[in-house]
Length: 317
Ligand SMILES: Nc1ncnc2[nH]cnc12
Ligand SMILES: [Zn+2]
Image 1 (cartoon, rainbow, N blue to C red):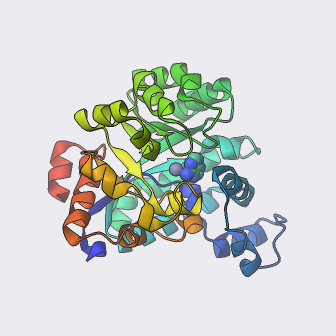
Image 2 (spheres, rainbow, N blue to C red; image 1 turned 135 degrees about the vertical axis):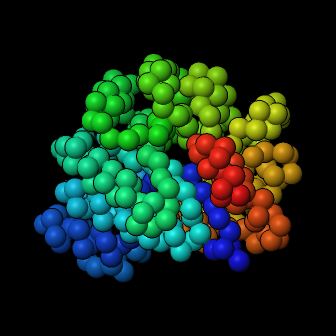
């Protein structure tokens, strides 16, 4: 039933879809030396204590992506799996700085990803949008030059996001970058309230003027913030399997998503980094163990919370 529900995926890092087998295949093809004996050795390292312990492995494995074909294959493999999950529209994150900072030209990254996204409706029946995500643990200057380079590249970009190590890197660091992105007509989202405090969610709303909050589950610690998010129906892209694997919540039965719905929040379910966190978006819906009616609500919310036009939303609802 879950796979039949038309849904949008709004919080998905393309680099987080690299499965262990793919990482080893790319390493072999590109002659990149990785410190893993085999697939089982690599997979055995997917036991994380927190966001940083995951990010360390995520960035290490990204080093296997070298050519436009590598980026294209990663993107195609995700879309092929997303179709199976019932995804009809995907707004996907890409971390350009994770590639340019290790010497891969921006054009290589954008050509590979962009060509597959552009053909996705025809090839997979999934409409797509690209959200260029800024690494918040890099400088504001690096963020601005990344935005400028992406805008100059001519690739179709839907929006700008903010990800990577949250604590110590508040949204306020990127006010100018987000102001420029908005002036250029991009949509805006930011990871906030994953490991960071509710004040980061306030900053993302008030200083970056984001249209959606990625994660946002720590918003529940602040009643006034919950009221604001509910009153303005600001979507939250929640990732239950990620929260368990990164130990933001102790286990899936204690995930606050049902409470968030009860409090009137516009909650959506997403997979974040499915190759690392034990499942794709259909698995994420299933893991919650919620009644069918609630799953329908969550799927409809994902379409409402997307950046599609009202006519496009109606066609999917
Ligand atoms: N869950 C997450 N939080 C922050 N940055 C990320 N980059 C990839 N996945 C992430
Ligand atoms: Zn994320």
